[in-house]
Length: 237
Image (cartoon, rainbow, N blue to C red; front, side, top):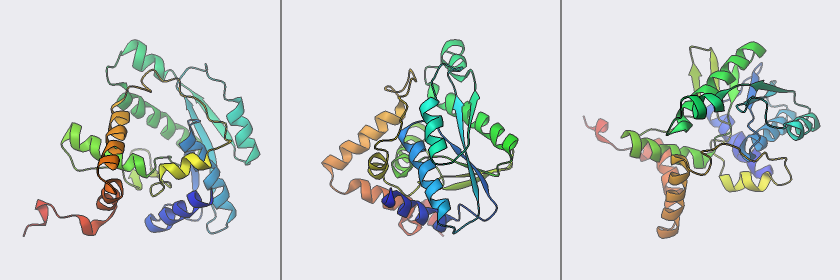
């Protein structure tokens, strides 16, 4: 967890993700990433560098069919209040809409539900557990499927909801998260598309590139994160 805290603190300070007086809702799915983020923010709060509060928010997309008792116990142990919002997202996406590529719609609906809970609880920020691997994966998904050079940002303001989205694990390697998540009550995903998504395909592609071209992953990360590495046509004068 110390290594996660180190890179998380670097991201918080570099991108100014947290300020005094913030009330931050942490999106918690029950997966390894969100559990590590919640624990890391709880530990970081104890440092006293900023005066802020956190609450855990879980969007139950399965209409109450999932047992969250272990997650509730975990939140109690780290003294963070947990709010569970029941929704019919899975039913809408898979049964009614029968989406062939369900991830995008599901993500939008979950984000909308999270924003609604944030407003109800008086939170001004929403923290999501996307990490460095997600940043790289999103870059390639935008490139291959949209023809854009784009990726997720560490911080963005959502004017429609008056909420600032932050990603404290933006600079954290997934391997560190996996190590830190040992002994945490990880919920196994019940999503029907969990093992058949475009995001998973891109992650596997990047893993193959790293095997075939040593250091390629590190260089890709550097190219995305470092503005001095940017040299495209709009630089022409």
